[in-house]
Image 1 (tube, one colour):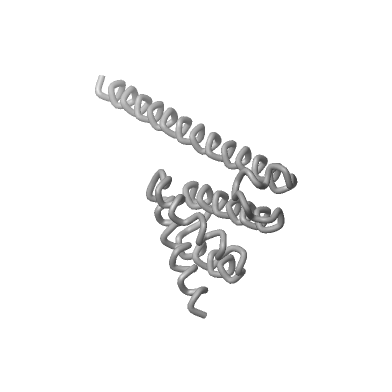
Image 2: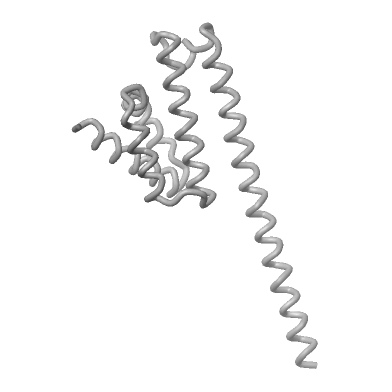
Length: 141
């Protein structure tokens, strides 16, 4: 009787673990679909002089396209950090290179407050902190 109970409990535990992992995978897939949709929207706006004025009014089309590309990188890195593809240390290396470009620093100057205000979780906050540190370091060089 004890072995049947243990087998039943083990099966229940495995079933619960499977359901938990299935839900986690579903969330990850949703996250990736949103990142793809965001990239498609940014790509469409970047390719249109008419639409580019809807994001950063008053900027020329080339500057808007650069900022949207920077925004796409930040969105991708946020997802990669959240899903475990990047650690804070390896992401910081990418951000140091990213902030080496003046156009990316201009993007960060215009977007950092909004990114901080709209951070959803600890991963967004970590990305913002790493980007702010990389920005400060690049700005002082």
